[in-house]
Length: 251
Image 1: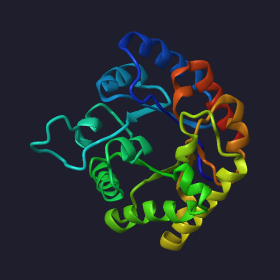
Image 2: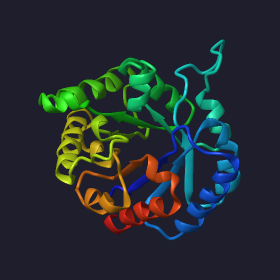
Image 3: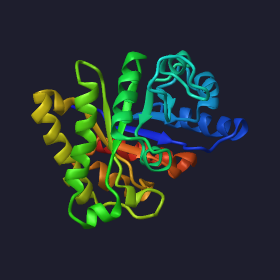
């Protein structure tokens, strides 16, 4: 059975002082939870996350990485660098990276490859814009994004987490209904099964679109929703811990 995962994406938020309180509360709050918990922090705070979370059940990771292992790429951060700080996960292809930084699906695939080479687990994000949903092409968009990763990166025995993030529900207060989320998650699972066979049943697919304490339990009760990629709510310890508890109940 797939273990639920709740991963907090801090985006570009945090300070050394506020992080200390937040990470301390998360560490204390998830000691006995059945779901897995991770925090994905800005790269400058990885050392602090490692210091405060080492020895706990909470994993940590980053929000982006370079597709290159090393070289003259000013401002970039490699998988090996992230791994030195104990990072387990790294987000790849978040909708904000695709939209604001022009990352193509090919680039996303290369970054997933780089994460594997560095011993990290990529959290590969896919999802449609509002106009694409209203045009009825959600599945076509998601399939194209996934196929780029499969065609470029390939899949051996590497671990992969997928995150379905309907772009129209990120930071807008709008959320896909549990049934809408399940429909796309089931489509992703079926697509992966055609490529991977029975292994597709092992891979976790997170929902990432304005997950909050109030809707988490209903979302996580869906059979193919294996947890959440949580944005703003991950910056509030109480709210985030409620989401982790919801995942534990649904586990």
